[in-house]
Image 1 (cartoon, rainbow, N blue to C red):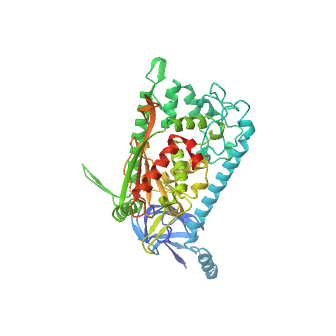
Image 2: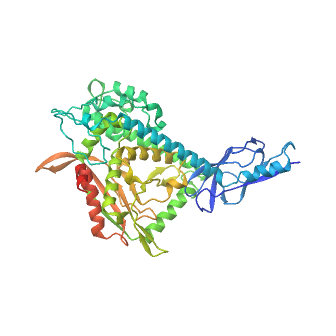
Image 3: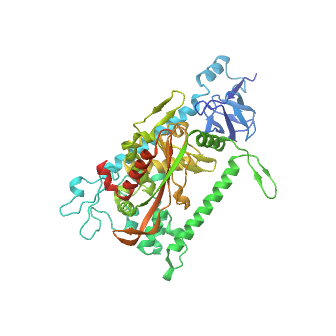
Length: 499
């Protein structure tokens, strides 16, 4: 006789009332084992695969893809005794031992444990490869003034001509091939270098300034169509490749959005998609924030030529060979240091308790555009991380967000957010504060512009910052001082010595 058990939708997002069926991973008649993923569900915070708490044969799928289901409602039925071979007591025990709720939480805990182990292995490998202070600052070497924490103690020695020592190639393009002694096999997959890209890049002909320009924009020279003399790659070729990459990513996001939002109505000139999941939650949060917290936005244009030179020096070193040390990493570190000086900027307005909560830690949110909408995963305790740690964390959360695999814990508890609008070719913006926080920083694109430097007009690398803050907590003076401090740290990282 069949023994039917119903799998009810658990709370996978810390008290959220419902979720959307994104994809069924099984069909009626399929035999499933204990903890086998059976359905992909999207809530307002995360997209997760839910494992079945029963083993047996699927007898019914209660909802179609795209349906919004309330927490606690049955979504799947399983016959746990399809052949009459399981005793009643054993069937009851099977259902009792596997509670509906903990399945995804256990899986999330395992993923976090694997991520933490990989991160520890990465840091241990890098620490083992780091040169000692005596080796780094060899006799006669020039000291490079670098902010503490920006390089986590590593300062490459320079000779009188400015060439790299301590086994570090002077040509940044040659550093990507190094790393045989850095324990690459122990690194997370997203941090491992792609040798085929390195090899193809080396075969492309380009002048050093163009190589630097491509590297700063994150463009592989192999993706460029050379138009210069003797088939050399020019800046225009890099710009064309960047535009093509942007168009391809935009098309991919559009197709993924359409695929992930289920059935939709189409006519000749327009399409209609249901508003749900992450996009619905983001819209509600932004409207609530805009009409609850009185926003003030200030702007600051900064000459970051020194910061970009420092980035190129560090990128060329073996210390950072396996980490994508992006300009955003430097902005993140500058924000963390400035929040240490002005903790009120990272505080929270508690309306119910009528209190302002000042956080003496930084859970740094990084806004990420995904096919399902904008999400803001945060890096916990960012104040305790070096710039290399921040770079690795930013890369990790961004790739996890795009894959739609963020956990609820990664999307809650943020204290300050950075929105990197510069990657889209935008100078800056007036960002809306993430609910529960008091400020957000927009980081604009880095452009080479004519700039007055030491009394002369010279081409310099410049960016514009936009800080939006809650005027209930942060007045104009505090907001201005915080923004100016971030700007000073980016303009001259050595200013961190004075904080």
